[in-house]
Length: 320
Image (tube, rainbow, N blue to C red; front, side, top):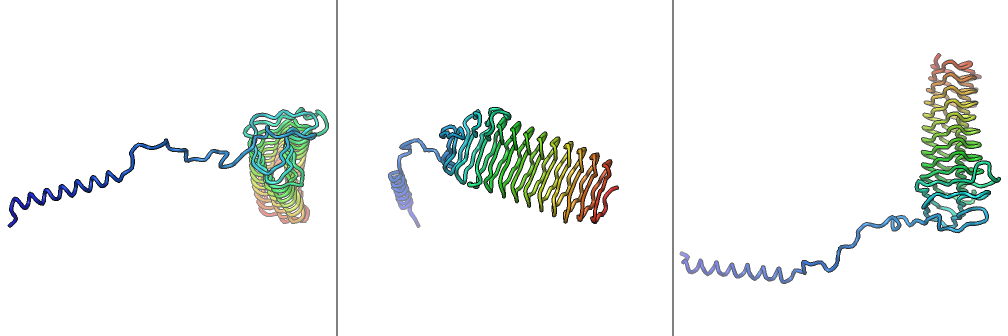
């Protein structure tokens, strides 16, 4: 049987071991006082995407600012144009320009003989312009002849020529082009124009090259609404109050789910292997649909002159 003395000895022994372990733990720990304040853990915007202010660039005989190296650029304020000069000229591939909500302001749409808000020749590709305005230029608001261009969230208005023009395989998205002296938006082949508004332009609101897609756009009060070349698709668009044809489709085009109202010429014109379907077409001063050698299906036409003018077409379930 264990005696009281033995129990006391065990208790003392265990207490000594606990004291030794605690001393060892705290003697090996570092100081609780930090040697320096914690450093930042997030990268700055310039570290994530190094960007260059456009207004730090040099001028040339043809432009106020010239971009000659690939990279990302941004505006720090408005750019005010000079007669017969571009606002920005691009002389390199792989360029992104963030207008940063600012404007490229030309000297006037009738002043001088040349000058675009932004200009790039067809020698360059992969150019992006976004988030701003370009107006009052003698020629074009945005003029990117390059392939694979992208123009997004840009307003182009009151320019002497085309509002926004891009080359083949390009994208124009969420843009407004208004009151320009030629087309509102003009693209090369195989391009996409989406969710754009083209109003009160002196030629076509939207003109697209072969194999392009125009989707979710509005073309109103232009000379002509939408003019697309061969193998194009015009989908979910609203086209109204244009002086001439609402939608002009060339051969093998698809025009569907569009509203075409109160235009001064044909509502829709399409030929040679085209499909016109599920459109609402009314109050156009010439035929609602003028088509040849095409499929015309499921359209609602009303108060056009006449509603249908079809030559060698298959017409199915059109009303009336």
